[in-house]
Length: 104
Image: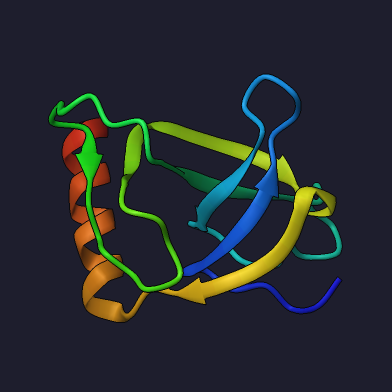
């Protein structure tokens, strides 16, 4: 597996129910003594118009939003291919929105 970094958006296989979809990596490569997992934030094109949808338009993503209620940890073997990366300002938007969602 190539190096993976926080802020990258990957095509991730979430299984049959959730299908293959883009997700933002909130964590990077796990250390050798950690579980082989990364924490991700799913991107969806099925918008509901609620407060937990964070739209960050990127040329490598279909119109949609990162769904702040869809934070998961997945094995790195589920990462299929890198689509692109969010910049520091965009990642700050994500972390601010997650802090509000999680009340931290």
